[in-house]
Image (cartoon, rainbow, N blue to C red; front, side, top):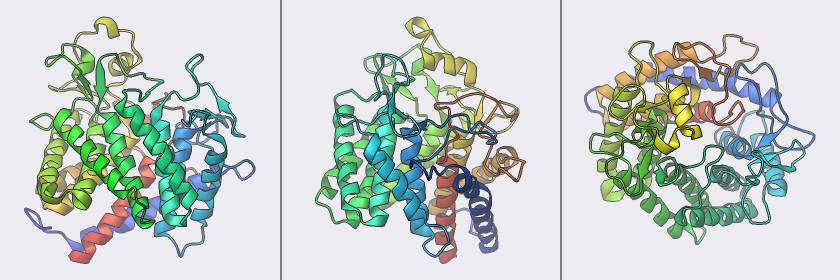
Length: 431
């Protein structure tokens, strides 16, 4: 555990208390008071960026599945508390089980408040994003692990097999930002690794026969990420062209620092749990990616991590060509300087995780750097709300815009605070 910098027990205890308090006194009260739909099931997540107004009662399956995961995870770690987290997770699970599945077995992307599928993009159908299916698996698997519900596990496994078939057949959908023709996306094997590993944990608890098959998928996904997307210097290009070794297009040369950092704790968790002889190699590779992500993504002028950068540094650049009007191109050109909540919460966790396993002083320094910026920038100054103002402009001022979904996502901040608390408890045990 120790390396260049020895762990300081009082320092770690202070961090543990801070993250635990922030989770339990600032973040979760927002969701427990505002998000639970006791009448129809499921959860409300379509709040504005400041969190003071519910703008829609629609239910995005993407966020519903994540909320099930979060509540089931809280049930795991807070079994002696006053909140029935498992019961709240069950409510979301039952809402999704009854409403989200289409005749194809895929998941609808968007539901009305009472669970009716809605077409989010006219003419594109109901199942426009396979990412939503992944988050349903994530939620069902965690609920099954904590509740012992065998049906939930079987539904998760069946949906997972459908997702993997779509992935292997190049039918993994990513609307409302469709994957540009001729490219593969790092975000797909990335999220599939996290989904596979979460499902594997649930299969283990049930001693399910599919454990070996899903373990094999984890191995293949890690090899895909490390072999096809991570460059020698630790840069991860978000898109890789199928046929062009050198790509002049802007889409083939951009980096998403948040995705790179989030994926590295997925890889580290895999390495610690399943990596075998590759454990040390994968952790060292992850540290290289973390360092490169900060070198490329940290905004030296205003602080914080930029949303998108070029693989050689600076704002995204390159030819636009046939993709000039593509939604992703426009996002790169107009939103590259945004500072997003999820990017920073992932960065706070992965840097401390890397430090805990390597003792590298640079990992600690990066953790302190991003931690200070994050908690000075994102928490809502209104204590009556508590939840973060999630989207900021380059200078850190609140930005009234939509990123990905028109929701106030319940997932990233809470998940990373939970993971930070668990990690610090482990670190304190060995100090």
